[in-house]
Image 1 (cartoon, rainbow, N blue to C red):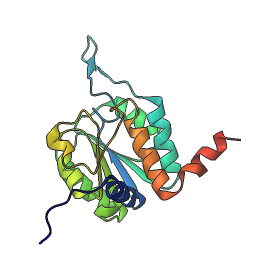
Image 2: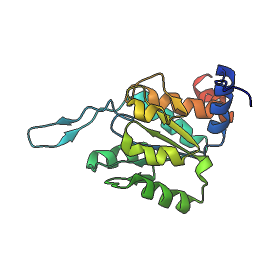
Image 3: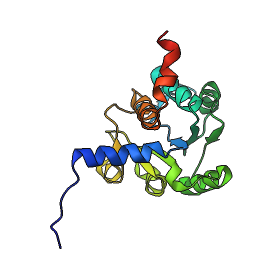
Length: 186
């Protein structure tokens, strides 16, 4: 038996591109992924979140390229309904105590195999979905216990470009990025 040999960077890149090329649905967690993970509360206890506009435009471009977008989060807020509507995200699941159950229901509803689904998370509550998906992604601030299960760890942080990075990675792998950028390059 041959000794264990770690994957080369070229093999890793090829695996990431192959996984990204199969994606038909990208599921995002919110806190720590679409935001920097900070929770701001006003004096009345209302939650305030900051979203990065470049992430939002990346999500819109990915959706226009034919990839479905979903959000599965354990928290519930009107703010997320507003953000999802702004981004034309039809699949918003809030208060998901069992994210894997929600993942399974959504994949059945859309008729998609796990290999066609990417999940972007940042903490252990996202691991059941990440481990089931065909392409699991996390942000650099994720604990090691999460990073070890990710096929791809973004270079940019959550809430500061990580979502855009993944959207462009998927479009590049699927050959749709140039078409999404073309209207801006006239």
